[in-house]
Image (cartoon, rainbow, N blue to C red; front, side, top):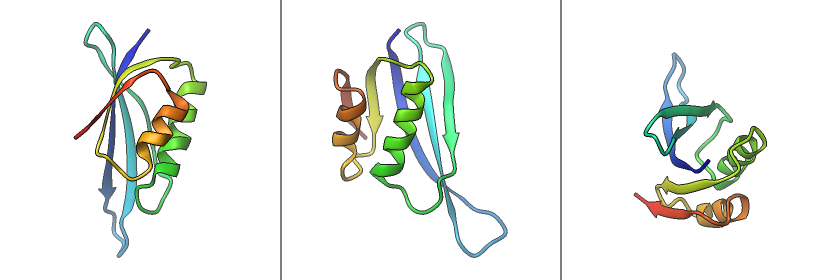
Length: 93
């Protein structure tokens, strides 16, 4: 079943001086149902490497095909996406 996939990254502020990043993977089924596929706290700034690990995890948990991915155009992201899911469309935001 194809998924529409939204990749979200934002800061998570706590009672510390430094910020943490949180990665959220949201899938939308063809029927329009939204599901959180996962959220991750890898630490550090956003990186294509961290998204690669997340996409590998999601694929290993059963999402074999994604029809459309929305991403913010992070450097190296297109290569990561086409490595893990080579047949989908990518839309930069």
